[in-house]
Image 1 (tube, one colour):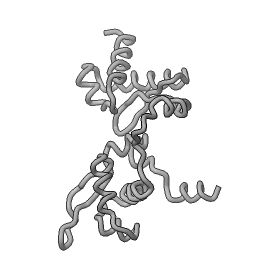
Image 2 (cartoon, rainbow, N blue to C red):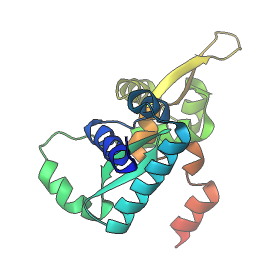
Image 3 (tube, rainbow, N blue to C red):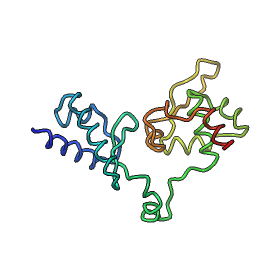
Image 4 (cartoon, rainbow, N blue to C red):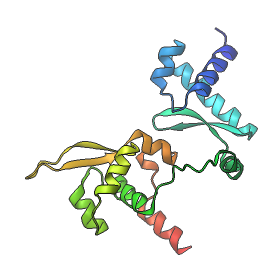
Length: 176
């Protein structure tokens, strides 16, 4: 298979996937070497970025995904607004932020930080698969430990947790 064909294959595989495709998955399906895949993916990401069209290819949640250009978000929202929403409530966002920055964390610690019961919010975040049970803390009662998921990274468009803003960045943004 020639380079142009390989690039088209990778592009097609990304296009048909509704979630990020891992390098390993692409390697298995396309039967290509990892170095070739990385080069093709870098070229595709550059081409899409330079074209500045309606679609981009990004690296997110340990994989690669085709996404819409954020520049068109307003119109896309109009197109897909159907009354159902994937928005998170303020308590859910607050709880998710606490978990993301303090994981693994038990419910009691989370509730101590928030100052309110978190049962309903935790259930909602588990149902949406934005958080998961990571095990049990080795203390009396063995409470459940919570942490974020791959879906959390996808939801917020993060490659990994290191892309979360630091407290300093958040404080600076609020002061501006």
